[in-house]
Length: 495
Image (cartoon, rainbow, N blue to C red; front, side, top):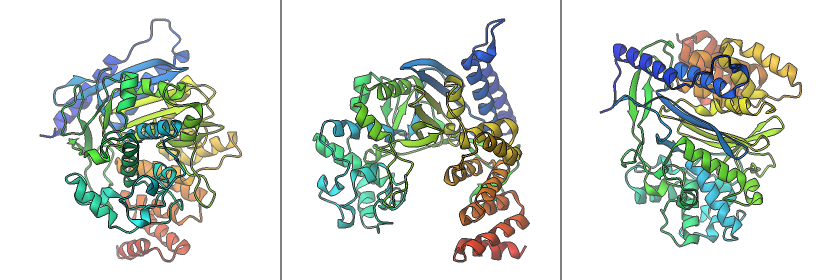
């Protein structure tokens, strides 16, 4: 049965978690200058984030110069049994599995067996005609335009029926036209790679990497499998009122901790299904970055964002996301809103954060930790703003952004990255933090219907009907065909 924490139990749980976090944090030696010890900075920062986000348990590791320079475990791994998170605690890493698939694909590119520019129809014959011209590169970078198998009614129960269903759905857009996160892409990659290797179509792809690196604590499986030392994944069930699925409750409103149950049938295990420890993941990150698994050329191809057909650059390489950090890069992958693995190639630093809370979004924490070990990492834009607002409060969004802009006059704020951040706040019950962030986006992009639509939605969630109505009317000025905005204007105007 899923754990249900009532108010008294919840207070005890949060108290005990805080005490356990403090107990597992190494204390600086007497007289030590904590200002120059990045490990102390990590402990303080992650302790604050765990308290703010109510994360039961977390494990992390930092790699630098090809070595693990820090590993930590904090809090409670199993809430049911009160067991602490440890170095050998296994967490679900969900879509980080895609990064392993990217490595598996690039190993075959290195061997001359796989051509990224080739259409998938060269390797698989039993496909709809409209699918056959999509390239391997477009599949790995989510530019295929194919329908998503995750929408199939039987995706968690009947793989054959789900695959039949998705092949009957219409193509969403021409290949390469835009980004669309789609799990069908990775099922196709799974089938291509296994066909080239003479394996069953649904065989997992990362087992060779696990064997070569001795990753003895990394396993495929889901909530229905018995995996040694794996902890459950939890989520906080938010109270209402709800608007469009987002909670507008006050930050201190009672919440219920529940256990999440996920199913990853074998045909989806190129996109999700791996479970691992922070130390195993750190050693894998070292192997990838140091050339143990790929040639330098293959690795750089994997970490280079793929352009769309209109010439603009996307945000995905081969199974890895690629972000600009000033003149440097951050490459990595996230999983299930609970796990993140990123590497900073120009700084030779990597960060692994695994949690047992869906909605903790540790990808928002990695830049801060990386900066403690890479003082020359040029954090501007979204990373700098995120760090500032987590420290100062989100009501300071405009002034903090102005300060960052003054130090970086050529800075262009990326609308999509800011918008994604705002919706992560909304989805975790932090609507009051999301409002000033969305207001800043709308100020920076006054002619963006999407920016004003996001702000209107955030105002609606926190109960500010007048401001929401104003923003939805602005959306219609910019995009008169927006049917959703029309419905909201009609609804709000009646109040």
